[in-house]
Length: 216
Image (cartoon, helix red, strand yellow):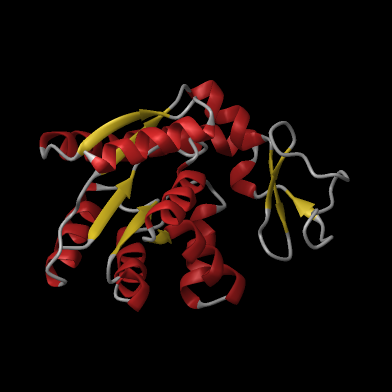
C-alpha cells in the first residue's frame, strides 16, 4: 500500500512548508492545490482564470474544479508510492472525492495531521508575506525578509503582495477555512485518522511531531 497523507490547517499555519519538508524526508510527492492553481493562473488556462476570480476574493474554488485537477495529478508516476495532499480536501464533498479517487487506485488514506495555531499568529504570518513575480519565491517582512526591500534574493524580480495575503482578505480566508473545514476535522477524527499538531512551534519541532505521528 502507498502512503497518502492529508495535511489540514488554516491559511498561514505552515502546511506548505511542512508538506515540502515531509516530502523530502519521506520521498512522497507533494501535491499542493495552491501550486496547481497558481500554475493554471500563470498559464491563463480556463481553469486558471476561473480560479483566480475566487482566490482574489479570499473564497474557496468550487469543488468540481479542484477535484478534477487533483485527480489528474495523483495519477502521475511520482505518486505511485503515495503523496502528501496540501490544501485538499477542504470540504466534505472533496473528502468523499478523495476516498473515491484513492479507492480507484486501490489505496486509502494513511493519516490526517491537523496543524493548529491561534488566529493572531496566522494573521501575522500571512499579512507579512510577499511573493516574487517571476517564480513565486516567498519572503516575509518579519520571518524571512529579502536582503533588499521589494526585490527577490533568488532572481532579482519585483516582490508583490498577493490579494489573498492582504490583512483584510487574510481574516476572511481564515474564517472561510474554519467554517468550511470544521466538518472535515470531525469526519477524520471519527475515522481515527486525525492527529493534532501545534503549528506555533519552531518549524523543526512541527516536522518532528509530524514524522513521529507517521511512524506510529
